[in-house]
Image (cartoon, rainbow, N blue to C red):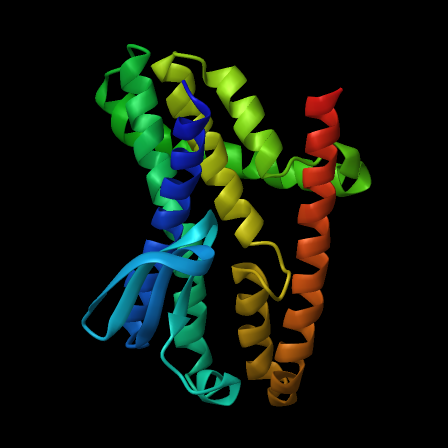
Length: 237
């Protein structure tokens, strides 16, 4: 399968993640100003129900922007509602993983009710646990990290023209996206949940949200650039 297929797959998984945030926001009553798949200037967009939906020129990312004036107005939203909003994306990816495991089991001939309805939940939990277990090793050996260049290159080589491998690769990427976003880093969903929870114990922690978010974004951008550099060096070798 082509590089375009892998890029489209990554974009689709990000779309599901952001859709989870959007639906969670609608559920808890948080108004949304923009739903974007990708970062940067919008390639195309439309407006519906007060929300601008758009596709940006750099598709490897996305965001759901609450319709608030500033950080203070956002933090005035009850912490419980903000936690549910942050959980929406990872939960959407987990549910998609369960569905894809069911598809994978069907493709490999395992079509019993247990294989299609029960096992996918166990398989998803086991994959989540395995990825969490690997993360400390990756940070201890950052040369093994992969950025988007590595994901696209290795994904194309692994998938080939095999639909079973395509579904398995989609599951792996999807669960990695959920797990990565649940890390306790302030710029990510897990960090936002942690900070929202901390407000209930120490209300003064609100003033730490912005500096911690900025610092973590600097860290993540640096990590992404490092991983991309490593990918390019591997491809060029």
